[in-house]
Amino acid sequence: MVGLVAGWVERRPDAVAVSHSDGELTYRALADRARRLAEVLVAQGVRRGDRVIVRLPSGPDLVVALVAVLWTGAAYVALDAEDSSARQRTVMRDCGAAAIITELDTTRMAAMPGVLPMARPADDEPAYVCYTSGTTGSPKGVVVSHGAVRDLVTADDYVRLSTADRVALASNPAFDALTFELWGALCSGAGLVVLPRETLLVPERLATALRAHGVTVMFVTTSLFNQIAVTTPEAFASLRVVLFGGEAANPRRVRAVCARPPRRLLNVYGPTEATTFATWHLVHDVAPDARTIPIGLPIRGTRAHVLDELLCETPPGEVGELYLGGPGLAQGYLGQPGLTAQRFVPDPVGPGGGRLYRTGDLVHRRRDGSLDFHGRSDDQLKLRGFRVEPGEVEACLAAHPLVGAAAVTVWGTGGDDRRLAGYVTVTAAPEPDLPEVILAWLRRRLPEYAVPAAVVVLDRLPLTANGKVDRSGLPAPVRAGRSVPPRTELEAALAVLWEDLLGVEDVGVHDNFFHIGGHSLAAGRLRTLIRQALLVDLPMRALYERVTVAEQAQALRDRAASAGELTAAAEAVRRKATVTRRP
Image (tube, rainbow, N blue to C red; front, side):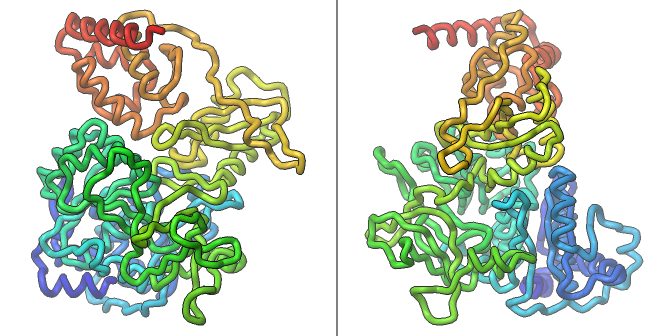
């Protein structure tokens, strides 16, 4: 991979490799900084085949660091800089890193000679380790090789990148879609455009940024795609290629984007174990009665088999488990040979000596050969594009000193409405605020997307006849009663917006948005609703700092140009809600 990048350094040294809010980084500058950082790593004892943790936010320093790690012949482990420290400590212990990069020591880099020759790893040497949720309650590291990444970014059947492209760098560093974005661009001589998180969460701002920066290629999670499709379906019209994936697609949302689509709109599918993308479907239009969007055909070099319990191919239309094969498969799970053997199995239908990865996903094959997704064959969940294992969340819940037993399930009608709920029994008489105490405890140990929207304290967990937790017998999560109802027209209007957005009732003025089902995508949608209904533009930072109705009402009053107009807009929201909610 780095060799492909180096080729573009020689051919297009002054071309822009990375654009960001503070300026640009050319291919020449990128190579120089990466080489010097690689020399710093080598001076610290990093050797070929080692693993190096990179804990940096998305931006030019992240790009430099990832290139530098591969320059040394080591493999990188990218962590979310905003992830919880407990989870990161688990990853750090598990991966056995030789070094950790949390910032670039530019002074030391400048003192390096900048002459270190680039390592030339073989195709089967590890390029990175990506940690995903684990069924045992701990994250597991997926080891991906240089050859697998090269095949992903050079396959030209689903996306053909060129020097004319500007690719959005929009994914969380720990999310495997970053592999496509970063290496797809740099291995093709294209430019990366860093999109700040705050821009991504506001559809109108994102649409403006895409046009202003000339972005031509972008990947978005299905949840974010859906949010954009609701408010700004034309956001992608200026792009050449948009890829979306991570969860089952919503045909209604896809149809809205198809009214003013990019040149190519692709629904992509792929687990981390198959190096980001394994199948793709080119969306032309969506039939009015469509219930699904196909996940399509395998990308070049990938094999997809739909097998029954006897490992025989199923006929078209019959649901089976999806098995993937080809050079894009990961090498396995770091330090877990038993789990690797369970999930990466001998190929029963292909040539001898091959492997297949058991995805755990249920699909059926259409008569044209494309695949339709049906769901998971196990308890694994996809929430807002992230893969979540209840086992990991349950293990964290059970580790709380006051919790005796724990269970986690998902509630909601589907798509962005789905939320985790935790259930616990306790070892002592519960205090009234125990659920909030537990949630705060979880937020320090789990990534935001894996924290339940609610924790319910039970006398005991319902069990099946064989002694397992009966998840169907768990009660629906119910928030504690409203403490203080809205006191003004503005607070009432905000409560209405929250209730409609989150699907809850009786929001109190001191309820915490992020404790009753809110998350980062919902916060972006709330900002849009407030601007449209109350005519005030609140910054995203304000929504993260002012998390109750009372606090947001005060923030609106502080920013409103006219108190009278704000009150009139609030009255209109409340009156409309009164009419639409009337029995």
